[in-house]
Length: 73
Image: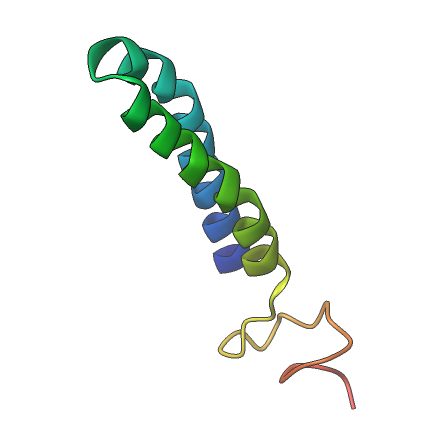
């Protein structure tokens, strides 16, 4: 469970840094780079949710899902 939370927080932090950093990049390098950063930042939140909700098969305490390798039988 801790690994999932760390991955989720890491992806969302990356998303915020990319989005927030796009303004200085806009002034320094131009519109294309800033739009590319925003496009990557736009894709990261759904990926973070998928990673955050997936079960970790190597963690025996990760049983908060009804389906998957750690589902109660």
